[in-house]
Length: 508
Image (cartoon, rainbow, N blue to C red; front, side, top):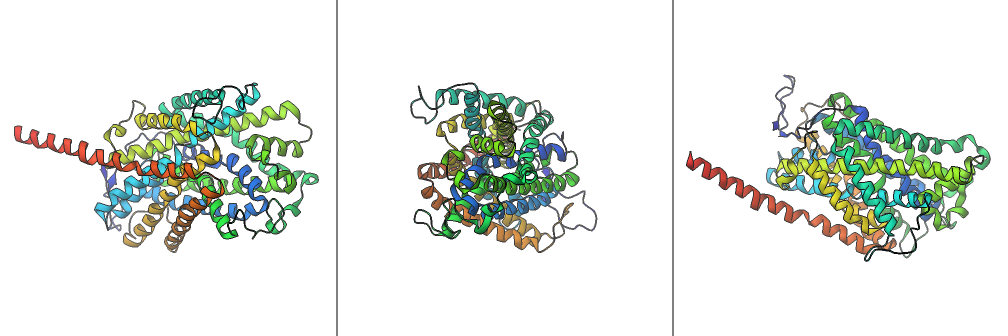
């Protein structure tokens, strides 16, 4: 279905045409917000890595990149309200923006952007299930470090089995539709974000365990200057490299945009869901790492064991809540992290599946992905996510998956941000239920440039700093896998359809 602006007010002279996603409108801003919390919950994985790697020097770069994520949410709020029938979130808004100036080029922009976004989001499910399975195995006494390990994997059998079962179970609420998924996500969000929020602010009410001097000068974990080099990289390269790692996490609050097309009133819901998501994301991503630093201190953070989320949260909570200890504290923290990781994995299955679905409708991906089930959701695209997630489980670790996945994620926003500028520049009179100030179109271009630097240079430098070059280049190989899938659609399926149409016409 092609949607245009024919129902717009008379004073609006321009129209925006695009292909509708056609999914059921069975949620509202709350549903989009709670499922989108999957992006904010990624703080549980990145905050420990940042503070144990960089110490207090991680705070400025974390705050900066997180603020760009809020800006991204604002841009997506305007675009989502303009194109309420599109689904799949940010990548789906690029095509209509480029189609007027470069119609032939626009379809490639559309396909590449959606595929890159998919590469950025689908690995969240296997990564989170690996982490969650580790916590479950620890709580129930399974050995995850010794014994029989599968050939060609870096993880134990118990972790592998729990991860696979977890991914398959999360497919159930994803398959049942947005209404059921939103209810399920609300339960998970309340069980995880309430304790996480409490942890983020609780240290403020116990000054006896706080040392604000740990933030002085924003020094590295070893006490060296903020401007000190690391492993042969100067300070600018270091923060750009870690900016690459951060963008995979802290701008993921944009995930709420994937569900605006399924809201009952997108004009109203887009601005609320995206603003709330961005604001809450800044709150969490700023306070959690600061809390770790001022409570635990550089000496404790120099212990690499704290890079494990469960370890650092248990250690932190033990200092802030000294009355709770031992196994009780371990169970509380493990339960919070497992539920949080499950919510994020659910969104990874649902959201990136919608991006593939919209890409198939637009003509850049095999038609197999364009089917929806009886619940009105793209089940085939989500099944594809499940299969790919089961493969990625074998990568085994967080930093490895970050490096593999972010080859696609950050670059997917470049066409969207440039597209935002083009829509403002070329079609100023389009219907915009939510509209940012005019100067923001230049901010969008600046943000695209920043993300380009993080993606290209940061990715190369971090792959060396983190010793994950093989995973980084595996991400590039996956990104390029878009080409044969696109060629199959246009050179096989579309030609077959065209030939079939010609034969029917002659017969008639």
